[in-house]
Length: 460
Ligand SMILES: Cc1cc2nc3c(=O)[nH]c(=O)nc-3n(C[C@H](O)[C@H](O)[C@H](O)COP(=O)(O)OP(=O)(O)OC[C@H]3O[C@@H](n4cnc5c(N)ncnc54)[C@H](O)[C@@H]3O)c2cc1C
Image 1: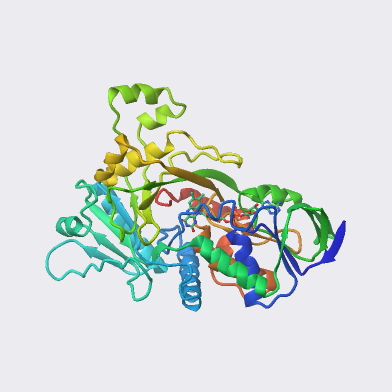
Image 2 (image 1 turned 90 degrees about the vertical axis):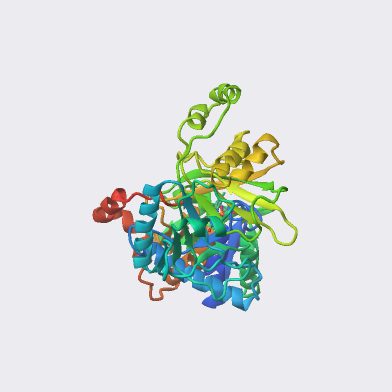
């Protein structure tokens, strides 16, 4: 067994682990940082993301808006420093509805998000003297508005978004939002972290030794031998394996996982304009089936669900530059907590269900239901907490920290969550939002009552 020492061992080289290593080595100048993973960096969940970001977080307080605004500030700084190597854009998130009641709820949620610091809500209801609606450029992020545009004016809806369903009565276009290449972001930080001395060890953390209530050493199963590292600090960044690694410390981390799948198809008919924003259909819906299809679907394991009211949230964005015609489509309609098994299970009909669901928002896509382009399907787990907020901070064993439970927002949040994790690890002043993400928050009965009352159905 090889034995050696480190200042800190980080367990997991997804975006959480890489960004933590980057913060410690590049921003804090910490020496002797080890990052370990049995798999190549960024290959379990972090490369399955839709890579989108948003500062539009309705509640139940301003903590998520504060965190995401900070994260986007940091991403923009990195984009400037790297000549936008990770292709950050700011096309916005466009939430659409055909339900006038939901349009009212969108407006109310918009007022709330705005009061939390997400930027002004501009209502476009038609008539003279209203604000201008600026469409977003396809590339880049500079000089764009923040906040959101709520479009209720039918003429403006039809002229600016002609490909949306004519049933659409309102869209909310949140503006400090868009997407980027998560893989490029991860690789950029990993290269800089390595250059600053971070060592990456290929291997699985199998054992953590504590003495006197403190972390003392970490054993990594690494070919050709087990490596034992004496280290006073250990950071759990194990993504969907958070619970298992927590158990090595004798700690039960309050997380569970949902399976989220994503398809990619070629939009060879050019239905969705290549400069379109990220788009989400906000209404629950019933899929259209003919009699023969209905009979077939009824026999499927999830037939009851597919024939009944399906949840809101089917969403899409275009993928790739240049001559690419690919579309990513996601519809998280199975949201029960599941065990984290790999390879992930993929229902045969998932791609077709996504296209049918998205056709409600963009009717011309229904052309693909009859002649389905060959889909590429992948996905992973949203590992999350009861309040769908990250876990960032110290654990009850001295020297142990967690940076995880990044749910469906790990790429967009990691710039700020890693900064927060590093502040905990190095003992620096914490930002105001730190308490909202501290692993001990669930011990506060008042907080738990507040989040139990909160309906987070607007979150993807
Ligand atoms: C379909 C889908 C769409 C998404 N869309 C978005 C989006 O649009 N925007 C966004 O911001 N986020 C999105 N996400 C969420 C985002 O991908 C995750 O929040 C993020 O990747 C989690 O990163 P992580 O580093 O915590 O986990 P991971 O990337 O899973 O990394 C954890 C690593 O820990 C390693 N590990 C586990 N156990 C051990 C051990 N014992 N020893 C050593 N290493 C270990 C694993 O091998 C793995 O490499 C999406 C996720 C999915 C699945």
